[in-house]
Length: 506
Image (cartoon, rainbow, N blue to C red; front, side, top):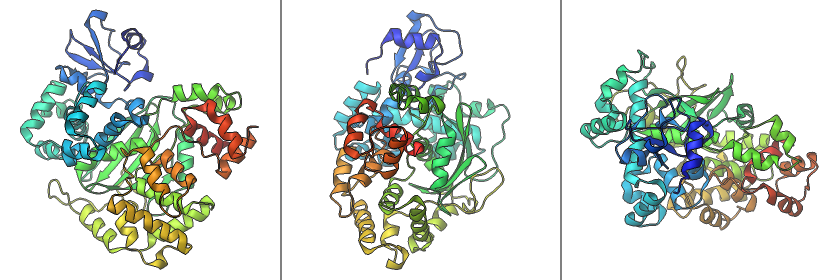
């Protein structure tokens, strides 16, 4: 990726937070790399290089700045929204695919050879998939070192390292410190009580309209799955290695996250999914600038800057919600979903016991994830949504809906199980929409709703949605699908964000 030196240097000189995560500043005279907003003295031009990723900076031997913590910067909005192979690869790497399946597994998911994938990532990111995953492992390890009292060997394997030696060498290289020094440097901070409990900050680019996010999630919350309580969003998680819970509290400049995990190897996927849920890697300044150029939306943008698109921690869950929500009210859909979740399935019971009562990393017992402790996430034993296999095991009586819709859900679940439909974060959006539309009972509204909320497409307008039409009418805009589609061309490439604003206007 080409980085314009003058533009990047101006951002560094002004300590512009908007560019955090877009690029990284390498200072060759000190051997460190920083965020653009680092409060340190601006380095001389001749000592500066710019990199598209932290891994690229690490690749030439630079270490992370201890002052601005560049490894904890927001993710690049470019890789967050791009639908090409590099964007998809970055989302899958963030979700831990390389740690679980290796580079061959990542290449297979994307449909490319390992060699070609390496070439594409090197060209765009300045580093290959292993280096990118290694940078993420280092950040995960630092979080565990600073927020838990776990032994270093357990942290090494929980973070995805193949050996303790690799763990030690990587942290010395990335942070110029031994792992034990990082723990000492946390200033006496005590690890949270409770096995598998981790507290961290999720950075974002301001502004963030937190109330809009919490309002949206609160209206759609389901008993036993999620809830909004005292300004904090609590929910259960279904993760690759077990269950989990998270509490997310928006604050000034960050979202405070407290995670309880059955298996600490799920830290990186859990963080990636929480960031995705709250759309924390968006560039609100660019989005709002485009939408505010329309006089009809300008007052709403000025009154509520930083509106995000609430996404998903579980794409299959979002698909089920979308199908059940077809042509019914949100309240009616909630009742049906609640009935679905309250129907017991053998696999969910087994998963909860196996995933929540034992630590698969260390073999030590964990607190039961259905029980809350002070200061920890929860809210009455929250757990993750049904998996596709779970849904297929439900009896007809557990659905509480017309036969056609029940069979649509089962058809979707079968397609996910057999791999004919891929709902993962790194899926090819166009291909996923095409395959969804081929399933009986799934139409354009459902497929496009999933493209917006599950796949992260920033440019979806749900013009046939009744609430969108009502919102358009309230703002004096065209309110029929055809006329609204034509008018909305001026909102590209951020029509998903316009959709959220139209919903709020309704």
